Image (tube, rainbow, N blue to C red):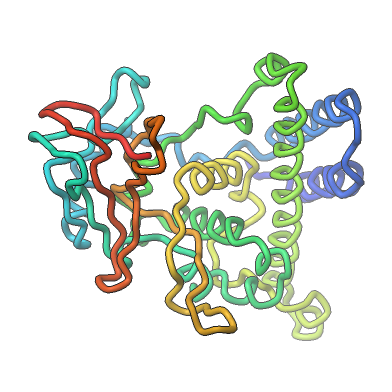
Length: 332
């Protein structure tokens, strides 16, 4: 059944103009009332344009592990007595690092070359997002946002993406407030976290509406037949991206945001420098290494396990304690 793009675009404009573009409410009561309105509008958007079936036919994450491990070896990821396996204690779909032999504290576990990572540099030089990055101040000013958009574009490319095997083992949902139901959010009352969670959800809904409107203008510019009409509508900033109004859903955007925010590491940029010539620290997704789950150490100052080596241009992690064969291996 064809999607009513006019109705879809109007609902997104209503979400933007009537709610998320307005000043943020200042009380918990007002924030909650607004949150319910945001949820209602997003539900109406989903009715007109059901979330893109990008995950519909996905196999279980664990079933994709063989392909991911082969890809990891192909792109030069080095491992030392660790692999990625299902972690049943964390849920059926949870993955993590497992020891394949005895490991001593401070022993190197994983080394990931830059070419295997998905970084802000990749997004900045990508033909899919380059024009948007150059001309949109929000994209230029929010490093995590451009990386989330890059992640969506790569996912939509499917097998054409060089990170396809990595994306295939990403979780579809997350145990963060962005994925909470209304009832679960109410369980946070009356802590300050309740208001923080509502503001975060509002911010992501605002970003979704903002970028959806850019995609709308992009679609309209590409459909314009006459040169004058195209000129009047402006340059389509996403002309070379796979994004359309019918595949760019809130579900997909919040998924990408969650992937970035829960897996992010900072590495030195290859391109961007500070005034003194030193590299800017940029966000990056680091395959294999970011499969490691976290553990808390009271003496955490001595337990930092993730690092980046400028000389070899690789990220790595070391063991924070001794492990035995079959143990879950954590980072701190």
